[in-house]
Amino acid sequence: MLDENSGQLFNELPDVSIDGDYTIDPSAFLREHSSDPFACPCCANVFALMLQNSGIDLAEQAQSIPRADYPLVGSGLVINARIMTMNPKMPVAESMWVENGKIRWIGQHRDVPDASSGADLIDCRGKVVLPGFIDPHMHLAPVAMLIAFEDVGPFRFPSVQQALQQLKQVAASIRQGEWIMGRQFDPSLQQGPDSLTRDLLDEVSVEHPIFVYNASLHLGYCNSIALDLAGITADTQSPPGAEIECDANGEPNGVLKGGPAMALVVRHNPAMKQQNIAEACLNVFTKASAVGITMLCDQGTGLFQGTKELDLYRGLRNSNRMQTRFRYSLGQVIADRWDELGVSWGEGDEWVRNTGWKIVSDGSNQGRTGLQRDAFLNSDSKGIAYIEVDELNAAVEKRLREGWAVCVHANGDAAIDRVLDAYQRAADMGLDPAGKRCRIEHCSILHDEQIDRMAVLGISPSFLIGHVYYWGNAFVEDVFGLEKAEKLDRTASCEAKGIRWTLHSDDPVTEMNPLRCIENAVTRSMWKSEELLSAEECIPVEAALRAMTIDAAWQCHSDHEVGSLEVKKFADFVVLDRDPLKVEARSLSKIKVLETWVNGKCVYQL
Ligand SMILES: [Zn+2]
Ligand SMILES: [Zn+2]
Image (tube, rainbow, N blue to C red):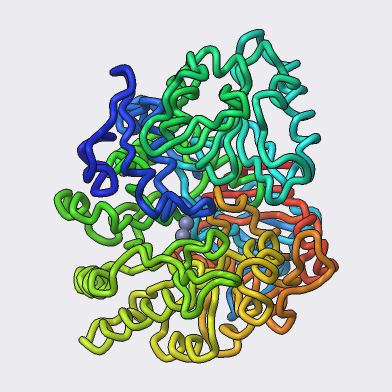
């Protein structure tokens, strides 16, 4: 068992112990949740298993993070800037006076207050300044866990050959015998063989053990030396709920299906146990700064290592080393544990604060587990409900009564129906989902009348806009057909109804990158295609910028302190090399983030 805090997902079936050292719970793989090969971490528990395999205790690691003396804070006078404030009362400015992390004054150069005369000058050389970007839905600990592995996925390497070439280069650069860990291999998007078999990986190296995770994290691939270290032979039995795949001669071919099978190999990599997830979280913040993000929101706290994740967050906050503000939603899956702890909404400060209660109502559309009104293309299946209607209604009601802002993951149209019903029911009882800025996460397939309902109820969607770009083609051709696929991520229709909406990465589902998200929403282009997906849903750049700044701040209950550049808010901003309103739409993602500032301090410089 993972730990007493890890909740119901892990407590229902007996554990299987593998040589006493590690304990793997097969139930996690027998449940429908984890059979979804594309599930986002809010509905997949593979991460909990990865962590379990490594034997890492987040609470322990959080205690030992080296500390800085005090949190980041800076002062200065921003000059020579074209500031797009995202404050409708003063949309543009030239100069901004920052004192102790906060904006004391902002306006035109000629009006700079005399009192600012001693301030250090922050010369922006005529570049565009925007409020720091906010990603309102990602998963911190899972991203931290993966960050150390080599990305050999389709967005870096279109073909399997290129991915293998990269692994060869890694092999040439490390000490003999050291493990090579890869991630993101995705045969559905990468040209070449469907599996990284033992033979293919032996061509990369017979000196280094190699282990590569499939993008879904439900499959792994390894070479001969890794199999040898694990003692896996033709005689080795597959662990329950998992499979050691064999070739025609009955020999293991290097393909491992399911966490328990992968664990047999991965646990022999000493580096897994030495991973410092707490430090890796700080690296995730560094990575966020490099793409202009100044605030992140984790949407599913507790699914990784139960309530210990709060210890992790506390440790990060107390380290004084945060360079990205952090918000989080508690996962409903361990509701009882949160209740025992007595956590209430809004706890924390401007660096780390809980701002939501997260419920997962279905799976994913690309994994065909999103709950649909009609069956998927060429299939009888209508997807999977991850929570029963009664339970959903009760949870939404209970958490609204307690003062929580509720965020419900819903990808399929039928799941969205259920979520809207639950919010409607709560509103009919006199509760206030609109006032609490309740959200639908992903909110992928939307019909007109659902958009009308959202407008009336005041429910706000956050779109995983990478769905359009990365999986748009798959939705059209394999999952839904064109007519339904065109109902994906309907930003312009929501905009037209006056609904506040945002964009998110759901990292590790797609990588955090606000300018890429903005480009995806503005162009609706699809990967490896000349076509656009429902061009009528394209939105102006201004709207996409709002979605990733002030509206994301609003969804995360932080618009009183960040999201726009105005007096009394924190000086969280980015300096861009080109003006997003002036570049060609298909070049938006190529705009460079020159600098990222948080609390008046520069945390990233190109
Ligand atoms: Zn989700
Ligand atoms: Zn998610």
